Length: 425
Image 1 (cartoon, helix red, strand yellow):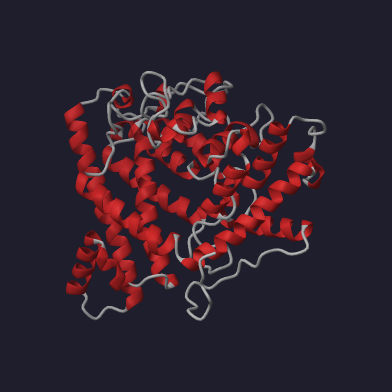
Image 2 (spheres, helix red, strand yellow):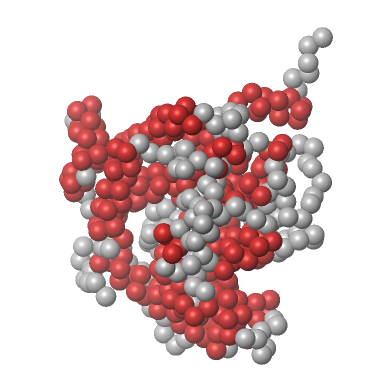
C-alpha cells in the first residue's frame, strides 16, 4: 500500500529528503528556554520565523534607515527591504547546500532587529552615550529584543526562540570567545556585550564555537545584499556613476560584460544588470566554495560544522577580495560622502539630545518605559533609555525631538541635487 503523501507529516518527510546530514535538524533542536508544546503543523524553526515576522521590532524596520534617511526617496532601501533581500539570498544558499531553509530565513529576518533609527549613525551615537554603561551593540540589542523586550506572549517576555536560532543570531559572524575563554580579536578591546554574557549564563550558546551552517549562510547573504543594493542605491542617488566603478576590477569586468552583450543599454537597466550580476556571481561562488569545504571536512552532523576551525559556508579567496574592494569603494564614495555625513551629523544631534533628556528626566518617556526608574541607579536608567531610543523609527525620533526641543535639525537632503552645498561637517 502506498504511503499517504498529503498533510503535515508528508510535508515534513519531503523536507527530510532535501536536508543534508550536516544541516541543523529541527527535530533535534535543543529546545526553548521556556518549554512549549510542539506544533502539529510547523517545525520549531518555522515557528521562530513566524514569530519574528509578527514582532513589533520587525515592523519598525520599515521606517529605519539603511543608508539614506526615510524620506529621501521611496526607491532607496530601508532596513526592512534590506532584510527581505537578505532573506531571499539566505534561502537560496540554504536550498542549494541542503541546509534548513526555515532556520536560514529566520536568522536573515532577525539579523537587523537591533539596529537603531538613522542606521549606523544611531548605533555609533548610542554606543558613545552608553560608554560608561557597557556600550551599545546592535547584535546584542537584537538578542535583548527577542529574549526580553518584545512583550506579546502571555507565558514569557521576548519571543522564546529555539536555541539554534539564538545561537545563530549571536554568532553568525563567528565565535565570540577563543578556546581559552578570552574574547576574539573583534571583542578584545571592548569586551563582549553584557546582554550576551547575561543571557549566555542562563542558556549556554557555546560562544567559543562556530554557529551552524544556516547562520553562516545568512551572514554571507547579508554581505551579498549589502554590496549589491548599496551599489544600486548609490548609483541611483548620484553619489557616483558607472564609470567610477571601473576602479574595482571585479565590477569593471561585469560592466565590460554588460557592454559587450548590450552595447546600447540605457543607464537604469545597466545599473540593474550590474546589481543582479553581483548577486549571481557571489551566490554561485558561495555554493562552489562551500561545497568544496564541505567535501574536505566531510561533516556527519551539524556538530562537526560547529567544531570546525574555520567557517564552512564561505566566499572563495577571489570573491572575498572582490567583496572587500567593493566595501572599500562604498565606504569612501557612499558612507563618507559629504552629503551623507552632513545628514549623519544632524541625526547624531537628535539621538544624543534625546538620550541626555531622557536620562536626566525619565518621566519624559512614555509610562511603560519610565515606570520603576524613580531612584534607579544610573546604569539601569541609561540602559532603559537606550532600549527606548533604539526601538524608535527615524520618523518617531525626529518627532520626539521636535516635541522636546525648540529646534530640530532638518534631515532633508536630495543626494542627486548637485546644487546643494554638501560640506563635510
